[in-house]
Length: 257
Image (tube, rainbow, N blue to C red; front, side, top):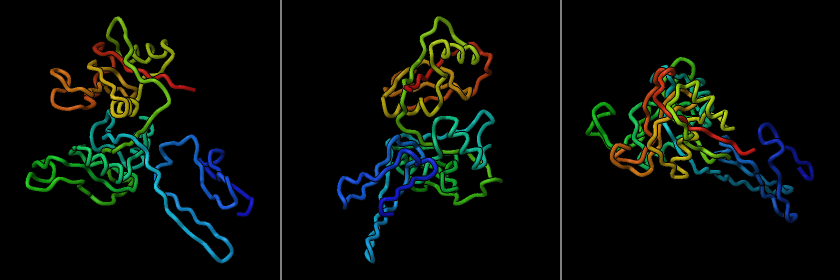
């Protein structure tokens, strides 16, 4: 509005107009977050003349299905939002899930998406997943009641500022020992989203099962081999074991300030 500029909400302090010339209306976003993904509309008004353009901001990242210790189909939409946020992620959009399906994501459990719909991606049709004679695709349950209906969720995460690593430790750990071990190393126990980002975007590969912050045990394999995800690159899920079991290592995350 002439020389008056104002930014709101989560954009405050990290959005500005470049203004390299009197005709430059370029919008600059800094410190990009997962929530910044989406479409932006720019409208320029000059007297009686106006022009509008829509620009999409895409983020390189990874979509992953998620359910908590309670088991499958235990999240309403708001629980799903919290679950993704707790794992350093956001609820995936349809476009993000569709791109993941094109990248061969195949998962038979229905999950929430950011628009309130419930869908799931199938690349290999089979009886429990819509029938083996159906075509591959993203199955759509449509919009669901955000408070009453319960499903899994598809989360999206992207690059992070920090270091994800498997902690070398002389013995296997209980969950509480794992948390403490990371803290002693100047880090925090890693989140599920951080493991997926390291696996997908950095090619992280480790055949050791380790505790994560939500109490699950997983390990990331980028190079399939015997005894370590022999058929495909994947983040392998070993479940939510008793936290007192002294059977696993731990993955840690050290953030960059």
